[in-house]
Image 1 (cartoon, rainbow, N blue to C red):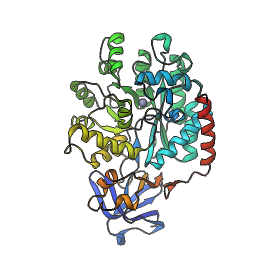
Image 2 (tube, helix red, strand yellow; image 1 turned 90 degrees about the horizontal axis):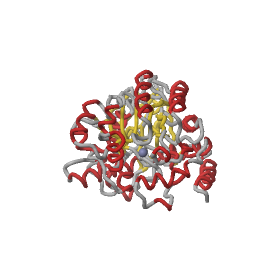
Image 3 (tube, protein in one colour; image 1 turned 45 degrees about the vertical axis):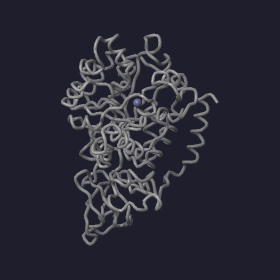
Image 4 (cartoon, protein in one colour; image 1 turned 90 degrees about the vertical axis):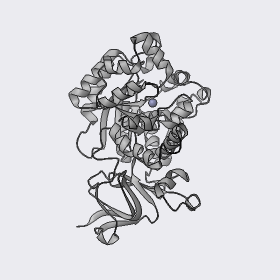
Length: 449
Ligand SMILES: [Zn+2]
């Protein structure tokens, strides 16, 4: 029996428990068909790719992002603000988003993610000045061939209700709930190997009404969906919750019915140890965003400490306007640096960081059976990494540590659903120049330049 593609002569990181030096991996029908060590045991293949000396890993999984924000990257007036100052400065600009600008920003984000070795990403789209913006994101994902987990974000509280955003980007409760149902019916594919899924994602505890939190949890139960939000990201959030709800963010999260295995949260920087234990026990996962945390200059969660307490932790780019890049390789490296800076040299290895970026992300998305590993039967989402000969010189003893320590690594080949989307470090998308030209026009319009 002939397979579609055979990658050979590579160092294959199948998952945390299985690595094959000088191994091969076969892809058939958009799935990992088999892996092995002896090339003589590999099946015949229509296409053979030699990856001599290269590291192959599962595609990285981005568990928290806001793709539209690449229209306002490194926006000078707010670069030195706090999180709340940054949000307040940018919301009036984001009020000008429309389907065209969201389509273009999603294309740019997905291509950038592919080049950084990411094959599945969620997106937290919570600004809705116009309808059908997430529909535009699904168009982009289909045009590129990217595995996309959309989340229907929402905000109900504008400035007049004590929130941060202007009235033009928030929506009323009934509109949010009806559009959530519509998107799930149109785009959520629960079947194996799906290329598009939808989760429900009120922006944060301080930006939506209590009804949106409880109704989202109810809808998720009804349609078997995942739930996502920002949680305990900033000390200002603690003060807001104490004033408005008379409790901590975690207590409120529990009160509105979100402490379930359906939920994953972004950041989770300021809980007590007891609160971490409670959410870990409830099966809630966390997405850490190391670059965003460090760029904002606040705190960061102790990701390895959370893992020891039984919480599953994934990684996310978060941004782009807070971090301004979309490389999951860079996030993974930063997770390693942040963990070791915090807890010392014995606390964390490159494999721990890679495990977060793969199986941890898959846990956040509730998709561990099919993505985040390369065991036979997994979706054929993987990366052959590329490092310059200069950067690799002298790195002889551990390809996984070398990958994260020695250099900027970029995806040489990125494969999603069995299709090569980045080849020799270059995206295969044919109209990329046109997309970038139009993205520049939309970014200028939104930044009023
Ligand atoms: Zn975020």
